[in-house]
Image (cartoon, rainbow, N blue to C red; front, side):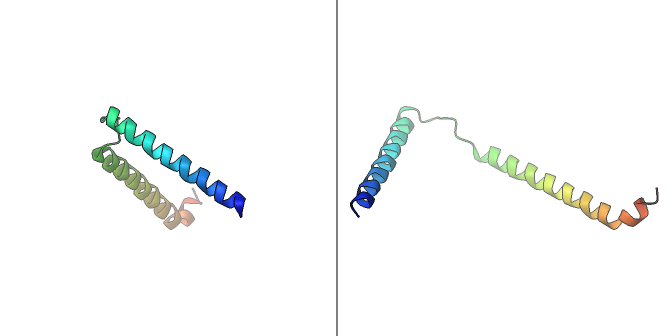
Length: 71
């Protein structure tokens, strides 16, 4: 039981110190280069488009698979 309490204390201490370091860094450099909302929207749109295109190709290939095998 004593080891569990010591381990929990170490984990909480580590998390607290990491949080404090992060907050100090944010105060020191407010423009850290975080990803903007526009960048996230562009990435989501690109991935969605790629998935839709791949899905469309898969549907077309499965639909015409029998007809394409005779070529």
